[in-house]
Image (cartoon, rainbow over all chains, first blue to last red; front, side, top):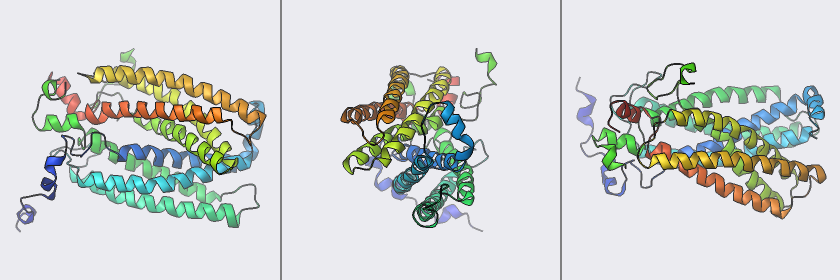
Length: 209
Length: 165
């Protein structure tokens, strides 16, 4: 069988843009996707955490009384709902920015990551995983909305236990997904100026003083 | 102190990868969303959002101390070079300052909420705006440390150990 590389055209599409890109492979200095990720992860984690706090409210209300911190169960569930809503909105942009920057990404060749992945693998998994996570977050937001406004509107505990369980499950998926993203940067040098300069054989003392 | 930590890996860290950038998810997202929800709450007269931003602010405040602890350890192992030395110094100074600013704002917010949870003084909204600017500046500095200078990334650590940086 002929090697697959025989079918790859010599001029990669990225070369059409090369003159407009910096050493980090982007038309700007700092990547956008990793900054939007702060919102996706932060808002999702806190949303689920506060819905758990709302669900376990009967257990913990004595603690808050002891702390002289006035709380309401509805307040906790408000955090759970609004943070998740904001998370769902931001995550469209997180994924969009991620795909734009992935199109311009050049993982350093010949690297094996800490969890044993090679060059393109983590990027492909991270791309597909990102879309799946976006879908799950949007589905959970719709689910959360039905619980809040229709199914459980008159109940103290605004969320089903299954919802919280799915949320905790997504923590694990996001943790693994984030590890892939971190490896793309910290090990494969994607969009990191210093790493790409070193890979090009340049001396950082001169090229990045 | 350093001998108390496990041996350093190819990221020059005693643990798998940098923890500081993970903890700051909560400072950045919760700190900035507090201002966003306060603004929407004032503009659309939805006091329920004030409760949401209160809890987010409290979480940002708790998280920044954890972020500073990991930040200091990882900064101590970062071996900054060139201009990244000054950026790291400034990032550390603003980081510690932010812990004070966030603590003060949490205390102030607690009092506002105790008096009347349905109202938000415009002065607090203004302070929230200033806090957001400070967070954005701090995030930009942190971004430069990783995305430009690649501190704690494997290629930079390798070059450093080879004496090339």
